[in-house]
Image (cartoon, rainbow, N blue to C red; front, side):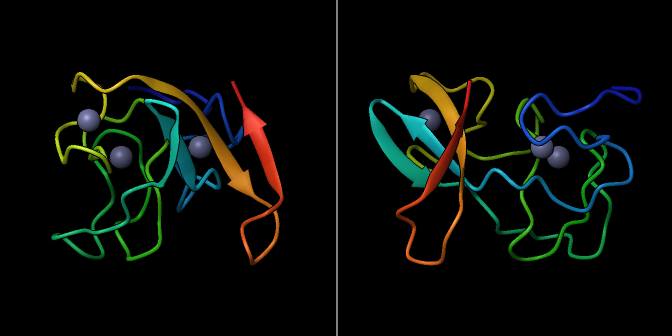
Length: 98
Ligand SMILES: [Zn+2]
Ligand SMILES: [Zn+2]
Ligand SMILES: [Zn+2]
């Protein structure tokens, strides 16, 4: 993938440990993005994040799983509308991207 920047959080994909946009809207519903990893401590081969619980792939990564159907996020049939970052702990404030 090279040294692209994430279109959501604006970080360099290589060298950032996690995307900061933690929710995704699918078929009109907001979901927490998948943060479960099997190969903990590894760097994602596609988007460069560190695989640790709580870390999020940058959108478009071929490893990220869909929180609705469990399939590969970039190829499943769910309607992905946009991602957002919650700006306070109770999840009420959202910064929406896309
Ligand atoms: Zn990102
Ligand atoms: Zn990734
Ligand atoms: Zn899906």
